[in-house]
Image 1 (tube, one colour):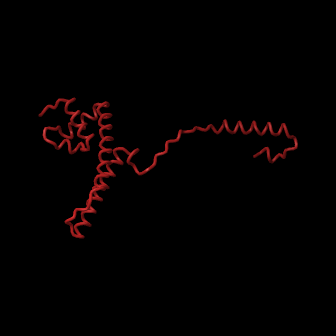
Image 2 (cartoon, helix red, strand yellow):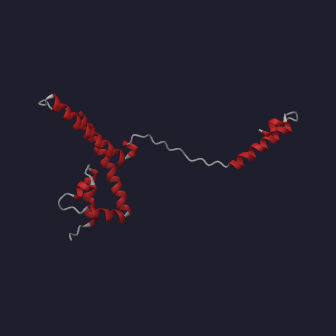
Image 3 (tube, rainbow, N blue to C red):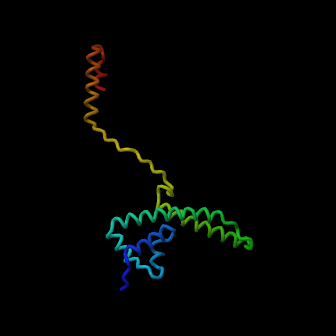
Length: 153
């Protein structure tokens, strides 16, 4: 079994991921560890998981840049209409795949949904009812002619 220097290996892996490679593509490269080795290391080390997460977010940005490059590519001049249509569909597929992966790796930047973070508000209904009852009592003390039905609402 091949032994990999942990720090050096992970530095290389994280750099490759940050530059747009997937972990599965990296593990298929010569002289790289297996996917199993990587998963075990990620499961065992919280700091490594955090670094991996940051590398994946950087990968999402690289894929986002690739989307623009793919969309800006001009049509090849030598294509007949059928081949041109196939080329456009291939580009669309490549763009859509990168958009999907980017939206999963970094949803805040590349996701389709707008996430709205609102602070949670806890309401104590008993306190509100007690306050309302106190207000009603004050109202009844100020105005003796207030109808009884108003005091019950």
